[in-house]
Length: 101
Image (cartoon, rainbow, N blue to C red):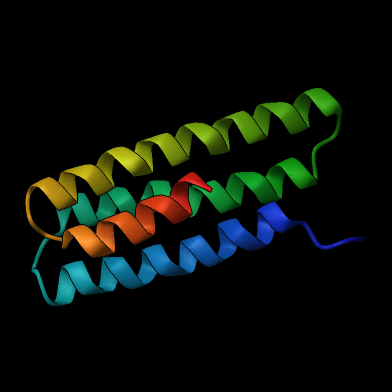
């Protein structure tokens, strides 16, 4: 089976989200928004993986649409973290760019 670019990117993004979560909880002592961005940011890749194992084309599309919704939610939490000054604009721009690509 060929390597999926989307699966690889979403996995690497999830790793980055986990590192952000660790930073937010250890350094910033922020737990609520950190947990939300952790859940949505890691869920993207989980749904991509489920899509790749989909039972039909419709199932594949459905799981990818859920992954897209999770990416949108992640964008929301990242914006809140930036605007509440838990993450710096440069870090925000970098991770948001990765989320949107």
